[in-house]
Image (cartoon, rainbow, N blue to C red; front, top):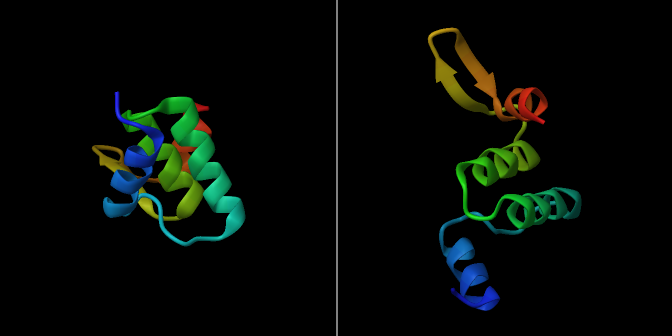
Length: 73
């Protein structure tokens, strides 16, 4: 199991953690704490950072990260 510091460094290099508004950063960290390293954490961090961006496209059309979060939580 990697140390918390190793995890933070890895997330920083991957672009998951970067300077952002404090309220968004708190939501990102809470999502990572709740969901760990799962696709759900990716969608929740997307919703925290850019809820208006497209997060999924299927045969019914696009859904934003915010819409995905609202529908699943």
